[in-house]
Length: 120
Image 1 (cartoon, helix red, strand yellow):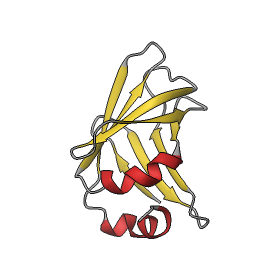
Image 2: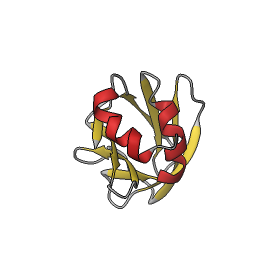
Image 3: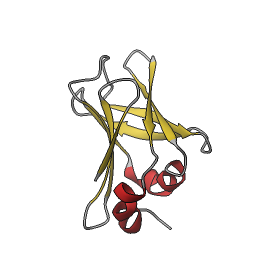
Image 4: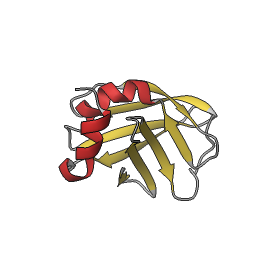
């Protein structure tokens, strides 16, 4: 498991890989997001070298968004080559909030995840 805090506030990006090679990608707020989340919405992810990618995000409560792991298995290795990534989260009324996460250095924290979870 690896986590990195957003530059904007107490929001964290969590990456985890279970022994069965199941990838988990979540965006978690320490308390709750300061805006209402939809149960399901299109979360946009981008970095310096990766254009905007839309993936499904699901929220059960107003403090965590689970990102669809299937597309993330393919794009996360590319995103992690950059020094940061940005996750854009829409609120119920359509306004969008950006969260910037540092992704470097990451060799030590992500080595086990890369070797077991990401497509080569």
